[in-house]
Amino acid sequence: MVFNFAANQNFFLSLVTEDATPLSEALRSSPWLPHLAQWANFLRNHDELDLGRLPAAARKRVFAELGPEPKMQLYGRGLRRRLAPMLAGDRRRLELSFSLMLSLPGTPVLWYGDELGMGEDLPLHERQSVRTPMQWSDEPHGGFTRAPEPFRPVVSKAPFGFPQVNVEHQRGDPTSLLNWMERMVRMRKECPELGWGEWKLLRVKPPNVLALRYDWKDETLVVLHNLSGKACEVGFSPGGPPARLVHLLSEAHSTPGKAGRHRVTLEGYGYRWFRMEPLATG
Image (cartoon, rainbow, N blue to C red; front, top):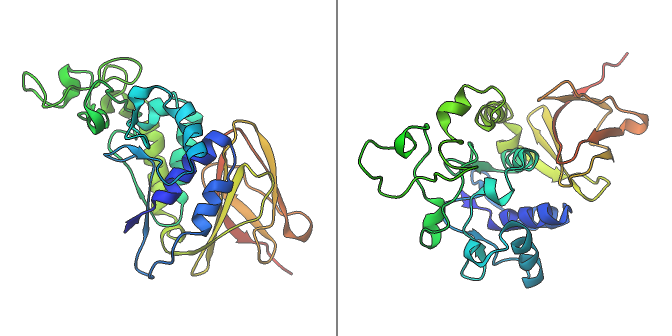
């Protein structure tokens, strides 16, 4: 597997500009990989969010929205922050980000604790800010250790510290980010098209929507993501004979109109995972 740094950096640029073009161009220009190789798609990892491949003006734009304070930045090119505080704990943008990561061509890679919405500890040195102990419970040291002191401080300040954000609390809450993520991972495992299928970008309007089609064996998957905070209507043709689009995450299915085209309304930061179901003939 090869980390797709270009897609990672351009995703955050697309998110802050509410324009899918940077991400779609990064995907389109990705180098060819052998059949058994995979792109590793990620949002955050154990280092800074490296934005060094973006033009200076674009990098400045991402800094301004996701890490405006100098202490949040590193090496003049990156952000030493966790995903949840970068996105101000906005559940809509967190879900959009994870849904996109899980449905990009390749294999998703998740940094521990992001499935909970853990925060960072900026007073720690450089990259150590995002390498704090896992927050298992609201017990001392987040349930990570019974030692008098952990090897590194556990994030404790609200709203992302262990008293508020921990595995134990979220396991018992069916609406928690952790339980949502578990459902999404299960769905990802039920969609082999995402890991093995041939993919292509679909032409859609408006430009804030990213649309991908995957084909594997006799199955086709279409995924849509609205990178804007405003609702929009998306008109597109998934290709092939007219087909019903069955939404895998809810009952929001879509029936084709003239010439097999679909019109789907996406809420702000909305997403859809559709499986194509050919219409009965005769």
